[in-house]
Figure 1 (spheres, helix red, strand yellow):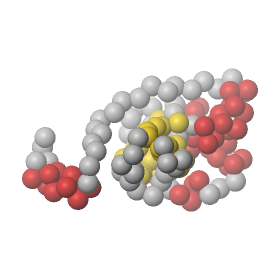
Figure 2 (tube, helix red, strand yellow):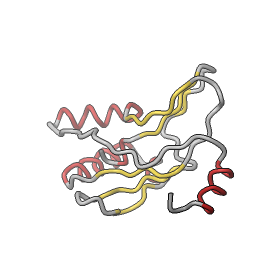
Figure 3 (tube, one colour):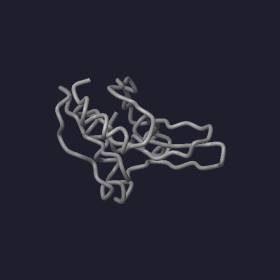
Figure 4 (tube, one colour):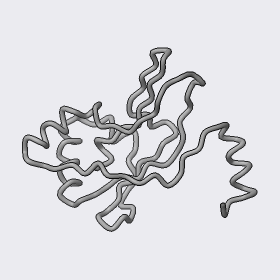
Length: 129
């Protein structure tokens, strides 16, 4: 899936529903061999939707993927964090109408929960684990 139409979302029982959380997240565009091509910025998201549509078409033609790296802050209440494309459904539906196919397969390399400072301390001491 192209980075342009992937969104990291958070939803909880308090009614919080944040979409496309980019503040502490980086999205790296990957070529068809898994090598980084570029990093998506917040400026990319502030562009006209037509620009995102055209860029996504190009990324699909080139069979690009996306690697998300970073962290999110979440309240300690029941809820979920998920990767979705629903904030960009107008673009997805437009591309589907032009017979573009989407590959939602994914691989999770690392997920952890807890305080970022504690995680950083542990990573420094046990970086090879």
